[in-house]
Image (cartoon, rainbow, N blue to C red; front, side):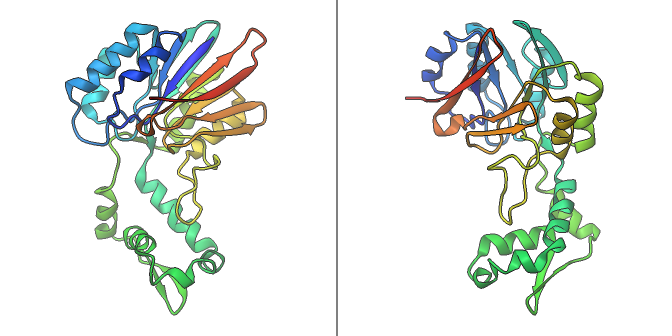
Length: 275
């Protein structure tokens, strides 16, 4: 079975993907078709074109808005978000979107504070020049006083600041974990937008992963054969027990991924550079 994986398209609806689509048994889309805002006809036409080439499955990304959720709900044959589908001898399970921002910010605050001295040591000399780091601290409610990192109390005003940054498609970690544990335990290939927590390359400023702990817990518990995720806009490979976890590159940057599973269930992948 040959799968073509496209992820984090962000408006790059290039025709060059079609030559790879027609030679694939299955096309998997991991979401984030645009940057933000409402979808236009070009987006929906692109999806229909891909789906007309061969079997097509997709999950929404964190940037995919309510209008796109409605589209997926009306096109159950292509949506695998919170669903399980059989194809070519494999059982696919999917979950799109990302972890909810409020929980992520709280975990990020705790992460910085748990080892504030160790975290600040390598970056303290750059604090005065690092507007990005200072902006992050302002958003999540941390401040540096006399060389020490402290947390601003979590007030309604602070939480409202976080609310403004919430993505369109987000879920609690426990909700994601429970779906796989309770509804998709027998599936062997997982289609995800967000990678598991700790996935190499998912660490952002300060070294904290933007992956999902719920996905990580479910992988460790169930050990599916393969998980495929996007969101971090880069190629990655991670082995968790017997599970091979792959991250697809961003189509926004003119890359896609091809995955082949042979009759012995051996998995190989390659990166496709689109023209």
